[in-house]
Image (cartoon, rainbow, N blue to C red):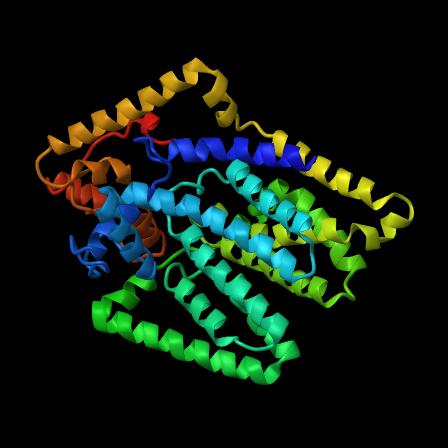
Length: 435
């Protein structure tokens, strides 16, 4: 069954890897991130002034990383996509190392890593291989978290992991479960070390913000505080998103309860409890996507590996052989991976018509880019990647404008007035461009 899980993981990864090189829009964030990657390289201010209809509410580091790599390979969108794919590998490695450091053997650690990779590539293809900084930030945070686990095992050397986690926060600021887990564990088990680590983290964060203020001025903070609506119904509606990790959640719940006397399992329980809470908290925000779940996927993947490792010690092992329990766990994981309507990897291998669809979508993107280029002045089709490819300046951020209108910071007719005044042309977006 381990071979079956490995095969399903490889098959699931086929589509996001192939798609990364296509001239299509995976998500509206791609063009947005590309514009700001160019801004970090000097094309425009990285943090726009308040009177514009665009804003950058992300920390700066990802744009310098993606922009720098983009200059090397000639395309920041492809650079962001490649970094996203690499980040999944780094996080899967982090799962492997975490399981090992929490008492699992190499086989159990491999199963946890495969569970993470397969789950992400199978169910979260909107983010895997997409130009967005979240997975990059989580990869750096994972390296810091693994370093923290190593420091925990030696009970020394906590400074470097804390600083790595702060750096990750300046790539994307909502990857918070791992540093919270580290700080709470220190507070419970090493209170003096927690005070030292908290002071170090606070100093590094304040220094980072001071450098950002010196580099970008007050616009950095006004952009970072861009208004966003929050609604409880978003979090309630997100309950259904847990279906994709339900097998891992069940494994964690059972092992977490029955083996809670084990200090390593209690650490895993803390990680996943915080992951579950922060998932629902973040999902209250308007426009917050599946990435709110990624730290929970990371923690549940670790728990899955530990569940496999602890099979001989579980109460169920009194009735069934541990090998049978491990087989059932792997079978359940594989069946859940297969039970999906997302058939792109299979179509890519066996359906010639799918390749014709890909060609049609790429042609739609090229045609729309050409139309935008031929329009004088500011123009957009609210497909930011097409606007970016056409060389048009970034003049309207649809999500930002909608949030500003919803929260009462802009009038509802702010876009239509620009169109009527001849300051903006809107081109209808071909739906084929967006996958």
